[in-house]
Length: 301
Length: 301
Image (tube, rainbow over all chains, first blue to last red; front, side, top):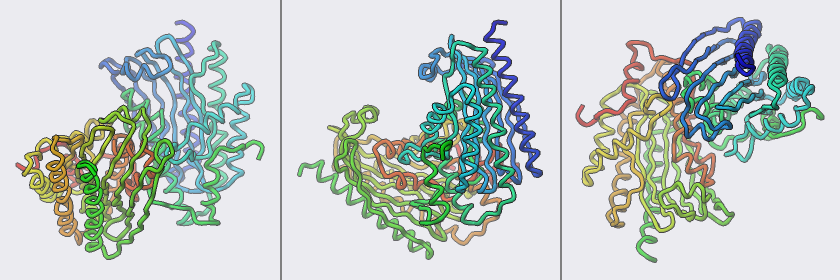
C-alpha cells in the first residue's frame, strides 16, 4: 500500500473514532437520548459499488434532533459536476464526519462540524471546520468557542485565515450578508505537499471539537427559557434552513454525488418557523443577538 | 403606445384586480384574518429605478400564513443570469401575481398560483399555473381541483400538456421524483404570435383560480383533525420547503433579479418540521396520501 492509501485508511478510521467519542459525549449529557443507527451503501454514478456510511440520528431531551454521520464513498461522479471540483477528474474518493446538534434549550447553541479527506484523480486534500449558531446573546460562550478553536489552530498559525473563511462561508447571501451564526473555522482544498504533517494537523484540529462545544452545553443545561426565547430560536432555525438549502456546498455535494438524502438533510432542525417581516423587538435580547450574526473579532473582545 | 405596451399595462392591472378579488375571498372565509400590506420599490441591477410591488401578508384562523403578492419590475438584470432566460437580453420587464395560502387545518390543502407576463429584449411571453398540496387523502377534492382546471383550459385544449408540465415541475428531484403535492397546471414561455388571443387566454385561465380552490376550503372548514394529522401536515410542509429552496425557478428568479427577499420567501410555511427517516404508518391515511404525490389521471378516475 502506498503512502496516500495508508493515510486514507487512517483518516477513515479517525472519523469513525470521532463519531463514537461524540456519541459518548452526547449520551453522558442527555439521559433521554435515543439513537437510531443506519448503515448504508451506495452505488456510484455509473452503477458500480460506491461505498457507504454510518448515520447516527438522535432525538432526546437536551438534543431535540441531531445527526453524527460518517461516510466513505468512492467511484465515478457526474462529469459535469466533477469539472467544478478541485481535482477535475470524475473519479472520486471521500471520507468524512459531518455532524449537527440542535438542542431544545434556546440558551444552548446549535453546532455543526465537518472533517473530510478527499481524493479526486491525482489530487487529494483536506477540508472541514466547525461553527456555532447561538440564539441568545451569551457573549462569554461565543468567546470560549473561538478561544478553543484558536488553541487548536495556534500550532499551525491558521486561526486567523480559517476564521475569516468561515465568516465568508456561512452567509445567507440573499440576506445582505447576514451569517447563520457566529462562525468558527472553515478550510477547504488543503494540501501542503507533506501528507504526514497535513494528516497530523487536521486530525488534531478535529480533536478539539468536543472541548469547543460540550462545556457550553453543560454550563447552560439547566437554564430556563421563555416562550419568546423559543420563538426567536425557531425563527433563526428557519434562517439555518435557508442557508443549508440555498447556499451550503456540502449539501449540494451530497445530493450531486448521489449521497443518502435523509443522511444529508439530517442537518435540518426538527422544528422551525418562518415569519414575514419578523423584527426582533427594540431592546430585547434578540435584537442584541442579531448584532452578533456579523463577522467580528472574538479573541480581542 | 404600441400594442405590446397596451397589453403590458392591461396585464399589470389584471394581476392587481385578481389580488384584490383573492383577498376578498380570503376575508369572507377567515374572520380572524390579519393583513399586513407593504408597497415596495427596487433598484435594478445597475442601480436605476426598477419598479416594485405590493405584498399582502396574511395570518389568520383559517389561513395560518399566506402571501398574495403582485409586482411590476423592469430594468437591467445580471447578464450571466439573463443569458439563461428565454429572451437572452439583460433588459427585463415582468409583472405578475404570486400567491400561496397555508391553511391551519390539515384537511384543507395548501395552494399556490402564479400568473405572469414577461418581456426580455425583443421577446415577450406568458407563464403561470396553479397547484394543490393536500395533506389528507380526500380524493373528491383533488378531482374537483383538476376538473376546474380542465374547464379553464378546455376552450384552448391545453389541460393535458399543462397538467403534464406541472407534474414534471413541482418535483423533489432529490426525493426520487416525489411531487410536493398533487399538481395542477403549469406553463411557461407562451407566445402564439397573436398577443390579443394570448392575453385573453391567460387572463381567462387565471380567473379560474378562485373557483378551483375556495369551494374546497369552505367544504372542509369545520372538519376536525388529530395531532397525528397535524404532524403529517408539518412534515409535508418540510418537503414543501425543500422544493421551494432547492428546485423552484420562481424563487431563484426572484432572488437573482434582486427581488424583495421577504416577499419571495413568504411562500414558506409558518411552521414545519423535519424528521430523519419518517415513514407514514402502514394502513394510516398518511400512507394513503403518500401514494397521491405522484403523477396520475385526475379526470378519468
